[in-house]
Image 1 (tube, rainbow, N blue to C red):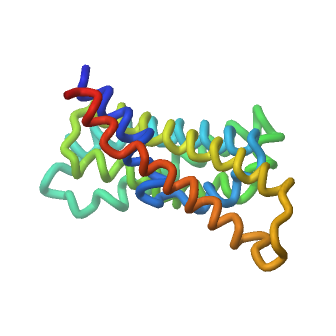
Image 2: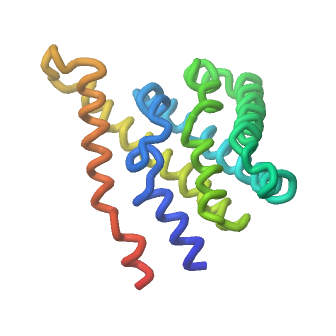
Image 3: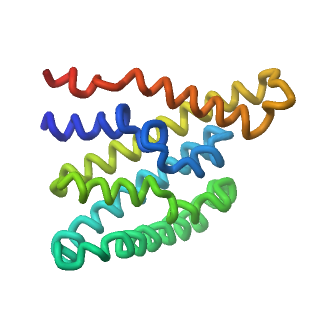
Length: 195
């Protein structure tokens, strides 16, 4: 149980896919202006990460194995693309306001390297099924934490007096780097808990 909790905390805090590994930056910068769109995107990413891990793990173990390991990336991308299409259809039908708010960023979950990254990380770390699921859950929750935090930071930036030459993307990137640096304070915390 300690190992699963450690994997979960590592994904959320110390190895956060957005703030420590810089995966999934496109939706992080594009959808984090408002809290409700940041939450919606985060829930969609968590769902896609968890389901893609649950689907890709048995495919990798029982179909691809070592013999066809060179096909992992393309098979994983196809699975992720199919799941994103499912999410897109469900949101369009049941939550059209969120579907419209997410716009182009929703289909971009397919190419979100954080989603592919978590599946490939699980394979490279040699995680079993349960460890893989906790890893994807931790990565997804870490994505959500980063999105919510950065949404709050961006709302403060909108109401601040920013010099003209820093308005727009420059101040957004500066703020993102400061949020990223703040997560460096968590380094070592996971190991320290279980000593």
